[in-house]
Image (cartoon, rainbow, N blue to C red; front, top):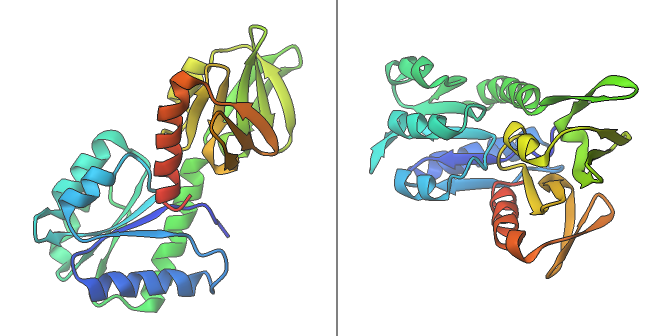
Length: 237
C-alpha cells in the first residue's frame, strides 16, 4: 500500500474533517498511516500550499471562499494533485470537471463509499507519480521511474542516476531534469545533486543522508533545499 501519499483536508466543519481523518486511519488499518494536514480556511490553505500535497479533500462551501475557486488556483501550479470535493449538495460538485476533480462525496460521508473512492484516488496518484524518464547511453535507451531514483549526480559532464535498482550513467543536465521531475518531490542540495526528498533520512548543517549516501549541502542551496524538505514533510512525506 502507498505509504508516501501526502493528504490535505480543507474543511471548516471540524466534525466532518475529523471523520475523514478517522476514515483514512481506518483504511490503513493503523499501519503506516500517512500524515494528514487539516485546514479550516481557504486563505490558510493557499498560504501553505506549494505543490506539496497529492490528494486534497476540498469542501466546496467555505466561510472565507469558494472551494471551486480554491481548486482553480491549485490547478494553476499543480496538474497532478487528486482533488475530491466534499459537499452537502451534489449539484455544486458537478462542475468539478472544470478543475479536473477526481470525484466528490456528499455529506455525510459513509465509510464504505469513502473506501471505494479513496482506493481509486490512490491508484490515480500512484500512476501520476510514476514519472518515466528515458536515458541514453552506450547501452541504448533505458526507462527509469522517478519514484525509484534516490538522487541524480552531475559528474564529469555526465549524469549518474542513483536508483534502488543500481546506478546508471547518461548524458543530460540537472537543470533540465529539475523542470521535468515533480516539483515538491525533488530538490537541489548543491549544484551537483538533485535529491528525491522521500529518501532523505538525516540533515545536518551542511550535509544530508540520502538513501544511505552522505551528500554535501552548499551554502547557496541550503535555504531552498531546507524549505523544500520542510514543505514535503509537512505534507506527510
